[in-house]
Length: 88
Image (tube, rainbow, N blue to C red; front, side, top):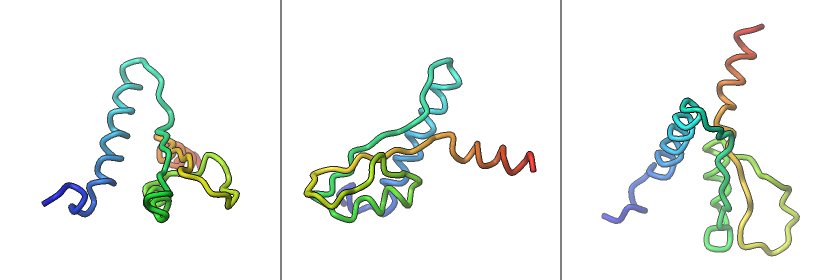
């Protein structure tokens, strides 16, 4: 079985990266965002995958022919939402 045939491995890898970034922050270095260039030339639906995993567009898509779309994941977004909810 090829790795790309295993359902859910991409989401797992994103969570793994998020965990590594959190550890980096705990050790005194700064990491706030995970940034990707979503390859829409080879997979036009790849942005849906990243959005499902919490990524947002770095810039608006203007409809012009592009190979990639820049997207980012704020690794502290869940914590900020939790902090705001707790203070209300």
